[in-house]
Image (tube, rainbow, N blue to C red; front, top):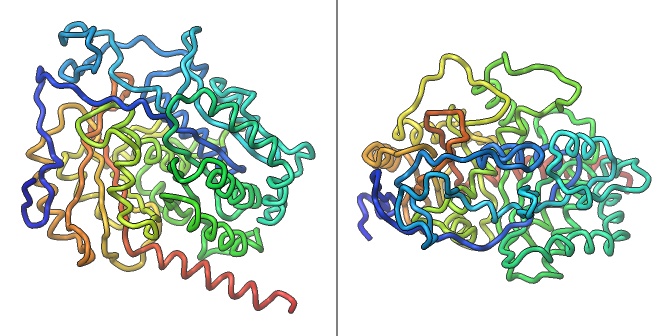
Length: 452
């Protein structure tokens, strides 16, 4: 392994059209849980993005496939030549989907909420969801934005939730990862989410990885949820104890990023559109992209564990930040017209900009780990190296870790309408304590106002 100024260049692999090679295809599967109003809204966009990348219709039916990446070869021995791959899918949908003999894909996911409106929209927008994988409160009144109500409800319905999860897990041959999408501010997302973190850890042990995608509230603004800090602090305790990796997003940064990146013309009000749909699309793009090397097999990172172990060097440092480059292939939105197509080196440097970050950072952080995803056809390895060398001189790493920027050469199929490059970054850095300090201050203020 060769290093240049601490840069791990062995992680950048060159490939050329027509090059023969076998890529490891993982048979591991992931199981996703969408919790509460926020979790289901983000989850809907997540599965729409996933379907877009794999050419799957809203009803789960795959679109006809023509391989324009002949130099990417399948693992299957029955396809000895590149020409035989012309109509052979080179993606690995088994990670997140169950495929039926009726030629339909069903997301391996459950939808849980205490009121029916959002899940109703999810089922109507995305009929590929299995309606049996839905749990709704009988009263349908919600959790009153209170962690205790959500946690108590989940505890009272533990058997129903366990049966719902086990029924889907029985279809998995090699479960590797649990994914949870939820908010830390609302009652169902925080309370039910906390209970399920405890349940999954106790019932399935530490052999399965648990990753969460969390949306933090707008901490600098007044919220209509008075007990928001209370909900957040109680949820954080469970995340610290039971999750293996937590991807952090906050509404303030998402709002700013959405106004910078996306064109105002795509803000079209609709009865089926949620208040944060565009922001949710940004989260969904990155959350979906994390698993790109699993779904589109390549030389590096053939398992979810290998990705997380690169980003989380010790169990305590598990809260991860994200950045997104100006161009991303996101369904239903258009970008501002003043953006031009970027080269690989441009994307790597753009991802270091504060304006591209998806959780607010007031000071320049120090980095513990960094992974850049560059997604496109026939990536220019020289441009990637150039961008990495320039980025290396600008990124302050903590002294006790290897100062290397890891790169994933992401792939996409012909279903993507975007012809340019896109990219995003997952990092482990010192900005997270700033976010937590705000939450603790708000919690202290709430505690002072409470009767003794």
